Image 1: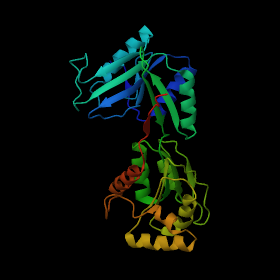
Image 2: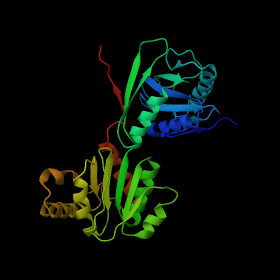
Image 3: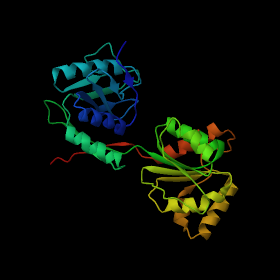
Length: 311
């Protein structure tokens, strides 16, 4: 049986594996996408690694070339030398074409900078951005990428939409915090995940809400008296997206309540409602998909390629 491929998505997840392997003094090859042209399922700066057993963590394609990358990774690890792989037009691997018609260039490094990996992992773990640089072997070509932490979504609500939204966000790879007055909802959603949960006691008792620029906050109540204090608290953060469940009429009433609590027009404009790209849905799973799509639309790319100056 072939060595497994673990299809983890985010650079922070790959770097977490890399940091663990470094602590265990286990070798691995770090794989970095340094150039894409044409269609692609991934982006420049995407990370993966192949460990000494041949297992791959992360991926570079939708399954068409990852097995080949895995084999080249094992070979690079055995040789102990960095190499560049080129797939697509002009590639020496004529039997491996990219169905999307693009080209892909990868850097395979069996001796990556462990200190830089630890530093980037620590920054992302603290929900800060991290910058990493990659130098092509036998070349002065340097590639620099900035990575954002895993996006976080804080959900406050109860009932079917709350449960469906938590499951959808978990499947989409979001870090998550759950808040609900219903202990049963929190209990059901606590397994198999280990996301933190907060039991809301009364509408006026508002817990601390940790929201940064890589976070979204959603209220998912049908009894909307739980919302105002939570929204005001969220408005006092750098949350990238704040959204609420309900009808257009409910949202108008919500905005009026927020204004009465001292929120100004700019702050109220940050609150999206009713959430969701598709209006008037009636099924909780579909509402959750529609709402999460609006959240994702508000987020920038998680990897930014930095341009180096001529100096």
